[in-house]
Length: 230
Image (cartoon, rainbow, N blue to C red; front, side):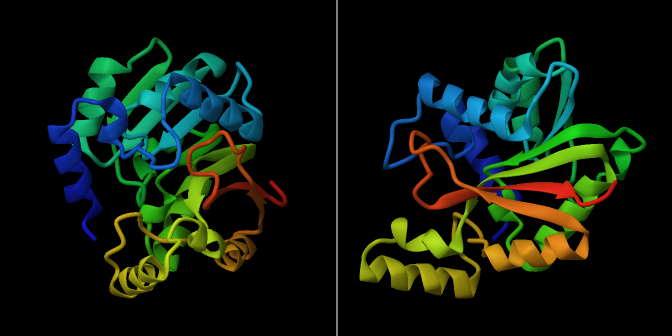
């Protein structure tokens, strides 16, 4: 799946900031209240403070970035889509936000800057092989400050795919799309895969549930990554 082509196409034709980044749900209406629940959940899990520098990787159009900005010192949003970054700069810019086009597989342009907290929300599924996911985590670690934390948020969970693909035909389609690499949701990650990556990088990987108020909590989980020793 060419994710850049997909999101460039969607963002070029959609005016709704939620639809631009695929934030729609057949389960729950996503509105301002739901977005605030998401932000609160992120703040709690990352233990955000007003002194933190934050990297929001795969930030999309900056909507969520701008909502997190009041709770930290500064936040930098990176995305591979020029169209979405243009929207972020024009619609969701604040005094402590900074947006730039960038490649999650190569964060060398950010160094030697270090970030206290790194967020990758609703996008880890687009690194749709084990090796791709491992590579982007390696890059995040290269710009993570000592004692810092990484939150991989809203990750489709393989153990819960049946909560989203509920009928037998839907389950058959899920396995077919997984096999052919054509699932528009992306990769459903297995907990064991995250544990293997964590072990390779000497990390802890805590699998976290989401509050039921969040729109995708029935089939997604979060992972909090921390170095075992800095």
